[in-house]
Image (tube, rainbow, N blue to C red; front, side, top):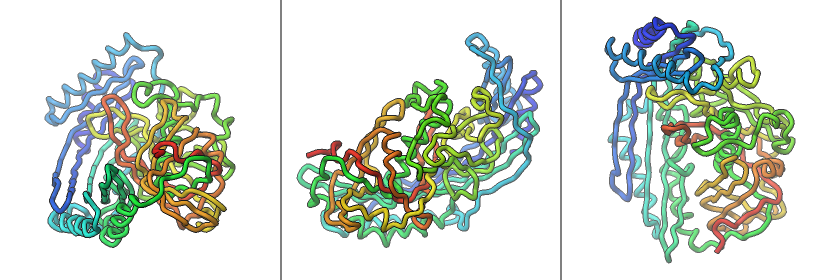
Length: 484
């Protein structure tokens, strides 16, 4: 693959470009799903190709190919160059890139157990056991379970002299139980909705999740929700579990700090951002205990946004986004960093495969742990506690939002007094984070994986990471989304 990347780089630099980079990528995937005692699907995939990005006459050109013959690579290089030349007619200003050093490295994400070394039969057997345990509960109408594994090796080469070979192994697993009664469907998922938990790990993640051991509780809760009281409507102190808080971070912090949204180049898909440039280092984004980082480094944890180098060859970095409640940083690329006067990109450019041009994407956007114990977070005189996302909605500036969760509890003095069905809450991003009153400590912090974040046209689906501990927020509007 090194030779392929260097061959493609040579093919395009001979045409006289100011900058070029190549990503040669080989990917293997496996997906397994079961439904109501039967195998839903088992699929495997393999892909290999390369993408060529060039900068000529101040404009980008990009082309990709899976024809890895010399002729195929030459054709893709020529196409990328011609696209750059054609783009001059629509150029508003020439592209300038923030400087970056040349890097040479080889990196493999750490894992203990290769998921592709575990037989499909063994993996299916575990999912069917979980499925059977879920359906053992009377009232469960539908049981679903799934696993997903991917290994991707990428070789990056650029005219700066970089040559980076990195391999990432990701795993995901989870299940859900649905119960239908009297025209209403209730759902409980474990360990998270939308497929479960995903991390930069091997098969050991599946073992750590203890799927079979948690199935009875989840099935029982799905059925019990039918008898639960409707979530009350009004202003309450709100407590969120770490998985729901991860999605809150994703939507109300992660997307608005993408600098391409702020600068207007991402307006068509999911909107722009309320975090205009004049807000930087001026906006009080949250209360003083709110600290958020964008961190792709391995030491941050095994997140879907963890890597050694981004798709521009920029080393993984940690960037403060919110510090003591103040908004202090964006996610940038080499191009957008130069546009706003930054001397370096903070390494957030990624593509979902060899056939797509890199975009600014979330790495691991995480809320740092607080100093409160879990008892202190839960210990409000009267609060509503919610777990596991069910639905979300946010406007095209990422400002006004509404979220629904699968299950809630009314809390009094730290004790659960009743289960609540159809819980929801809404608010304004900055008002919500300024209402943060307590964040649990590092022993309760989890790095969650969101495997299905969409951006770009054509759409790119990317995995992102979000670390959080359970947290409490003062006087949040609760209960209006599913009011009975």
